[in-house]
Image (cartoon, rainbow, N blue to C red; front, side):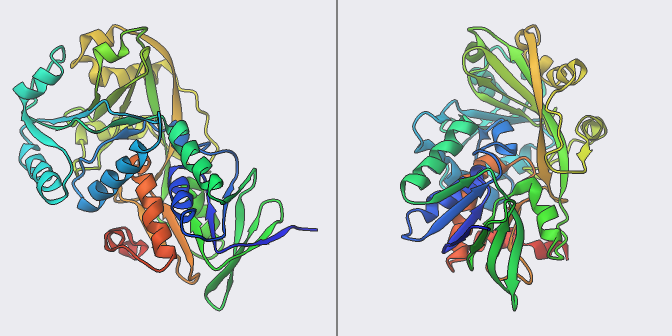
Length: 388
């Protein structure tokens, strides 16, 4: 016979967004259940490079990133304040100057606009040819994605949230347009009027059962891993984001450096020269979770080539096995966050498009607030109805 439970709010998923939602709810004197198919951060969260910065062209994203970083900094040992340097050439300098001004003056984040020469002073051994402007965030950095997510989940459990691992939501129950509960993969039924689906790449298939068509798709992305025994932080002490090549990198401890690429987004800029090659290397996946995490030597070298002209020293390092991950993408590279049509009380967080880790703790928090009746204005940007 199936088990039956009831709760005030159910959180599906224990990636960084689900962890953020459960942690916020755990402080609200509510009966909360969190369901996870595997273990915390077992999905895309655990594969994130976890670079954290507030530099975004959309104020909604930069505000969520600011709050997300505040939450992450409160987790002992999880956040590394290595700083983040985002560089560009003359083509994008005017727009990026305006972004820095808005984030600093209107949103209150600590960020500076630098010339190419000033950026050179921060990374003196990097080649800054063609760089005319940089956004420098000395209080940003990177995270341990597993450590941060598990710390939030453990705090929520300590505050009374019931964690149910090894099972997933397979059906959302609705009566007269109102959410009444969920059925889990093991047959367990949980009665509740409020459900937060922080299920990322698995959201589309789940909501299709309710006749809701999400415009999201899944992309395979990969990270190259450089072998830098004892010198990783010497060669790259900060997070590096290069808009001229769409390359990003960061140190991972003292012995390795992570290097990745992206096709565009974040500041509204896409690199046309990179798009075709990026689409070939980072192809679409049809089924969530069906991902071979291994990558080829050719893929590692391709990613590393994007930082070679900036740092010959990094280019000369050895190559460790890299890894692939899966991104839940939206057509405009912005998250989709909304109450589900025809299922009042069910909320979805998906389509994070590679931005999800730094936004996740705050995104979970504001969606939890919405589930309790307090919708935040900044979420309107991410409505599903923009694709109607």
